[in-house]
Length: 160
Length: 424
Image 1: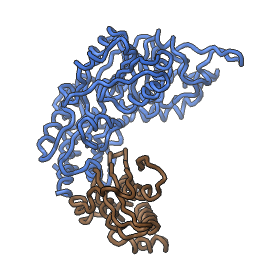
Image 2 (image 1 turned 180 degrees about the vertical axis):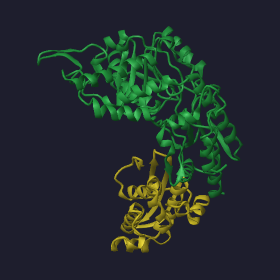
Image 3 (image 1 turned 180 degrees about the horizontal axis):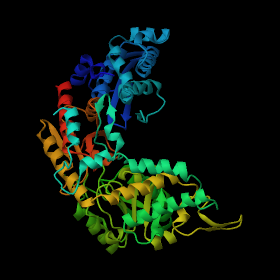
Image 4 (image 1 turned 90 degrees about the vertical axis):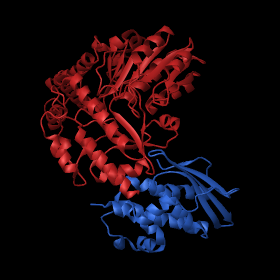
């Protein structure tokens, strides 16, 4: 049986209480809204880009502990990364949280395995894969980031 | 009280304090209530989302497929006769339940959403002119908003919305003000799915009629709790879903005033809704068949009929008194929790307790409660305007059925204690 402590790890609860980068960036290079209509989670992501490098990242909004902590840790993680690196991190994160919960993390495919190594602090979200209804909460900030760097649309992204 | 002892207490006969209503006996009729969830006994507090099904309903669906499966109205063989009898029997039972009189006023639909879309597209689209008004309330479920927006876009009609007060009740003064000769349709819920408010629809219908408007009542949340008499209410349309009232999913009822149904164009074309088809001209079948194109959910209607029989077999007044007792108990217990805030404190409520716990997002509460076997709904409840009105993103909603007990509420309160521990 999946344990609550797998999901609500201390790091996640801390970031929920005191989220990092929870502020507005004035004149951002990219600003993107994300919305999860199922639970009402809503956030705005701000990015400052210098060429291809994410110089600064921040967010505002309201949401559950998982989505807020995810946005907090993601904005920490992507600062200083290039846009392609941030996209790769999205892929790795997504692979981890959507992997089959019966497969031990260490037994994931070689690619995904290296992904969990690279994820560093973000691996606190590995417990999410045991709670399928919460995957959208953990991935909302990431989908929003991907849309922000894609410049494909001004419409809010939705995880529905 | 621990969850397991709470469930053991369910087995005490006659619990609930109502001599005429034996909740232990009712619980025994619902097999799923003995299910384990994450290794814990199920505490089901999500009946406004969908109700659980008594064995009689499960058996009726099974029996249909074992002994009567055939298409209706179409064949001369015995199985088709049985299937038709079950389907038309379901219609007659629904007519009796709603005191509709003539069963030809009962259109069998896929559910409440389907019924509202049918009325919006068939009635609304044929009568609405640019500038005509459709009057809704802030309490409405998305399914009683979006179909009207679609038809407003098609016809040039305008949507007007009556506000709600801080208790979650429709502002009746504003309702009176917004009813004008331009108002052609009033669409309002009988009971709010997000807050549990019982609206004074009989008065609202009379006022709408005086203004010359036609009224559709969304009865999805009322039907499992209240006794409904469409003739006494004098409504023009009343819609409900089988699955909220202990029947199968995918079927429901649209009651319509017969002269309105007869004047309305078909909603969908297909088999069974026609009287004669040539490539030059098709004559439509009479009501209600004109609105029932294609092979319907026959098994669902067979189960729905059994659900209506089940409801008719219990003392509805005693059941409602029991539910009211559990709701009052739940309200008092949740109010005692530090940092709790109840959303929706209407003077007349049924079945629903929506609330927040300070510092905890409802979605997190939902996951932690689920781990303890407690099923609630968290989120916007398909009623985003209600959430916006209270300036909140979501609520935790505990909703009741006839099978819930005070012990279920004790389990919920214990579960919420655990929620607060995680987020302390």
